Amino acid sequence: MKKIIPIVVGILFVSQLTAFAAEPVSKGDISEFSGSITNINVRDYGATPNDGISDYTAITQALNYALSLSSSSQPVSLTFDAGTYNLANSDTSDIYFFSRSGPDKKLWIKGNGTVLVSSSINKGFFQFEDFNKVLISGVTLDLETQPNSVSRIDSINTSNNSIDVTWLADSKSLAPNASAFSETSSNYGFFLDSGSQHANLKGKILNNSNITSAVSDVTALGNNRYRVKFPQSRLIQGVTQGGLFFRTARVNGSTSIRLHANHTAYVKDVTIHASSAGTFNCAGNHSLTFENITVNPGQGRYYATNADGFHLKTNRRIYIDNAYMESIGDDMLNMSQSSAVNVLEWLSSSSIKVRYNSGLNAYQVGDQVHFFDSINAEILARRQITAISRVDNTVTLSFNGDIPSSFGQSDDIWMQNFSFEGAVIKNSSFLKSRRHGLLIRHPNVLITNNNIKFNSGNGIAINTENGTDGNFSEGYIGHHVDITNNLFERNSFNAGMLAADYETPGQIALYIQGNNALSENKVIYVVNILQNTFKNWVSQAISVTSARNITIDDNQFDTRVSAGYITQRNIVGVDAVNNVKVRNNSSINDIKPNLPFVGTTSLSTSITENSNTISR
Image 1 (cartoon, rainbow, N blue to C red):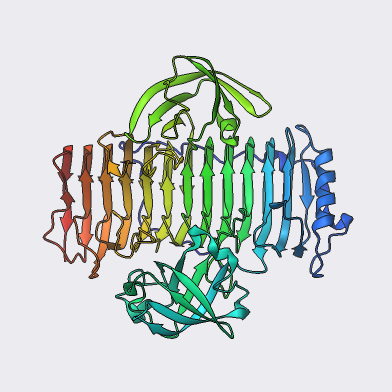
Image 2: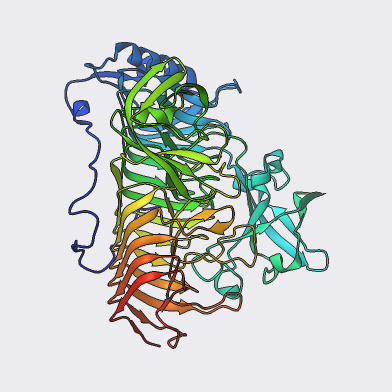
């Protein structure tokens, strides 16, 4: 599919209210790879494109030799000619085809119209850890068998909450009752292609957006036919004969590309068409850049990956420019910090020995760290790191003051680094996810000039989402975030994912959740939502809860969607907030012009509203 990124009409300006006068971070430095480097070509080791024979062994030998030549002063490229290379490796203990750790190594995986095709749906392609620099460019990654199932609906029986389907075996997908679907996270399905035929069906308003429904049982009927049962008849209301039914499975597999604990990791001009468990998993990198990335199902397919598109955890600097992400089974982008730290020994009241995880690689002496009670949304202590040392799989952390004694005794006390430098997400499209478009738990983030459309969850969510016991372990940080000049369209139609009647708070949602209750502690702050366009929005466009210093200026809201299953609310809703400004916004084609532009609660203070207009 050709990458097309429409530009949002408007002129981007940076007002005095924005968090940044310039981008908070820059792209990683890969200039060394453009100079004199050692080049190893996989063809010299027997890898031949387009012959249908596995090139795994040849590429492995070439990679090993390339790494033997690399050092901190000698970058090396592993070069692929154009064409398709097949990969097959029967060793099930290998969860990646090419997994290497390279202290002080500088490696370039250099494709040139190169396609790598895997016969193993539960095996990733590349895993690089602890490199000085690693660059991956010019490659397409694909699977021969899709980690999902596509069937056509033959009949619907609402009396027993079931549909009969015929599996499209020539789709190179799994059968609907494949063992891959036994995992709890796979117990849901999608209805596709209802579109304009069933505008009343949730999630089917336009552009083949999907509705997620829980699946209770699948029975084989013979001749590629199956009976799919659902917990309730309403989950199949509006579905018609001839439509498509779709199932996904993570199959306990690996992401396509895993980059952990590298100083500089850079991915450029890369396309991924299928993955069993997400496309990019990156943690503990000092500098992480994605440029010209495409993740989509490929021609004639419906789904790209069964987990996050970008799963970015505890990285110091992140830069994403010109990404096209389509049809993702979880969040398009999940940017967070790991809060999971295993304390092995208390050395003193201000020093602990912990088990090493790759996220700790991004920590530095001088960093400001918060210890956070995730249930009560309370910061217990703010400390500065005075010393870090690593021995094998343990890390000793020393601070300039006492550590809360409860830290390490339960999952609900988190450690969060407030000194990470920031992230830029720009010029990108995020289309059709089962969950959120962008899930942000990171400081100093600029989100600008993106298309964010048709995502079941929020277009952008900034929240804790830790559940009831704090063990979700993906952090709470969300401060100094600029959301400017983006296009949001028809997001937040099925945010419960498994709940047929649940709606998300809004296209953009900021909230703190602890013990399933909203907290009045405002640890999300300085968020600027400026000059964005919201089209075909559902129920409420922007929802802000338990936050402070929020500016919502100069946005346009075009066409409120009418549907029987939602409650129409204020365009902007605020609850338990302090210092929120909502100014110079306009809503057109609004079927509820008499609702106040902003809805507030008694817990909110210092709310400023100026020059907001609503028209039918």
